[in-house]
Image 1: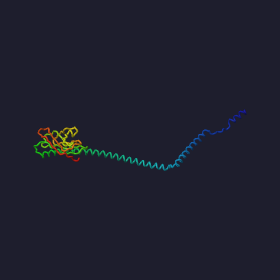
Image 2: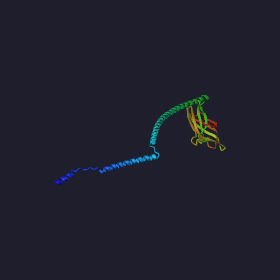
Image 3: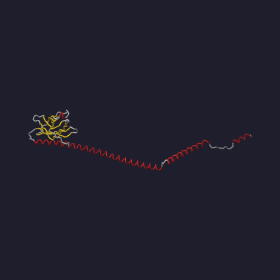
Image 4: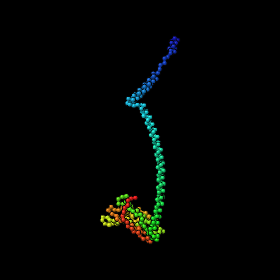
Length: 249
């Protein structure tokens, strides 16, 4: 009984509670890591300061750059707005030019009609009303775009009544010399074989703009024109003009 009571007292003795060693080690480890990270950051900042890096100056410079970017973006928006306005103006101007070109085309067509009528009435006044034939007007030779090339401009008008249309052919030739010998170039030679004659079909007036090409060693002297009508009652017209080149208009 005594021994049992002795053991019972020992079992009921107060126990001492000790802190867990692993928790303490983790706390010290985390604190060491944080301290090391902070020390590295301080070293990093000191290194940048020693190298001439100014945090406040960089922040100010960044603020200035952000302000510049904002100004540039505003200027970009304004430029885009101006570009859109210029595109609108350009489209409007293109439409205006198209309208002006159309109006000018209509006026030119009207002028051509009036010119034909005027040329016809001039032919009526210049000759007898009973005479029927053709007349060459507005003959001129201008230099072409290449050496040895020329542009022949002439117009045929009715001389007399215009009850029917004038239909026929026009022959062109250039008389001159080549190598000291006289030579005549017909329309086939003057157009590199593309044309042999020009055909006309009009009531009052017809205008011809024919390109001519002369050989390099050829010296032109006269221009000969032969007008043949398809109507038997109209006599052929043959005229010769001195070769004269006028400046381009």
